[in-house]
Image 1: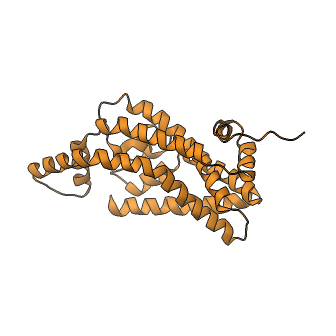
Image 2: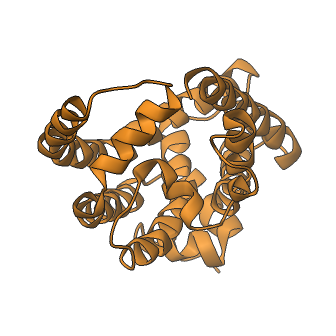
Length: 235
């Protein structure tokens, strides 16, 4: 009996409830638009509710404190006024562009890495796999959205610590930025996405999951270490 193809929209719940079959289906007939549209919609909606809750005064004072700067009050207030004008536009543009930009970048890096090992897959397969593998992060954003709705004010730099889905809360950012960044990376939704990327790329390239995991986890580890180094230098 011939297997009934999974629809592009039906693959979204399939990622959560039957990931192996779903990514096998994506490998055979790649799609990417529904998960990308969902991610973009959640990102824009989340930002629309986040921006009015941002405490710009606290955010700017925190940035100056981390840099060891002592700035006159009038300059702080001028910076706050400027942020209130610019931030809504900037945050909304970033929210709309980020899902597509991140998906394209991650897909091209992983596609290039797999091709470098001589494994055959198309960029369309890589992009379709990537957009679906990031859906756990979209779920995490929805849960975080519910948390943010209960807050009167929010510091954007502390968003990742609010959900407690990672170990970042164990170390204060101010005390050790690099360690805090490393612990933040040990996130339930990020690791979930890593697992899905392994399943998806293994199916698309027709290689073992162990081989796929070796490449994907190594690249993820390099990214995590780079992010920690950046935090150590610029925090």
